Length: 99
Image (tube, rainbow, N blue to C red):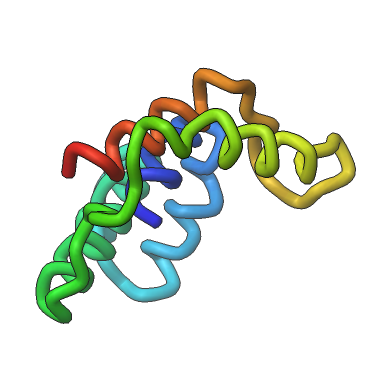
C-alpha cells in the first residue's frame, strides 16, 4: 500500500494530511509532510508485522497480463485519486519485484 500511496503523489496529500490530523501525528507539519509521515508510519507497521514489501512469486513475464487486467478495470467512475496508465502499473510491479 505505501508504494501505491507514494505513486499517487500530490493527488492524495489532502486526504492523507487529514488522516494525520485524525490520528494526531505531525501536528505542526505542512500537508505534504503530514502525508509523507502517514506513509512512513504504514511502512513501519508493515515492517513491525514482518510483512514483506516484495512479492516473491512475481516475475517480469507476468507484467503484461497483470497490467492488462488492471487497466481493464480502470475507468473514470472508479473511486481512485488517479487513473493510471501502463507505465504507472509497470512502476509499481517493478518496485514489488525489486523490494
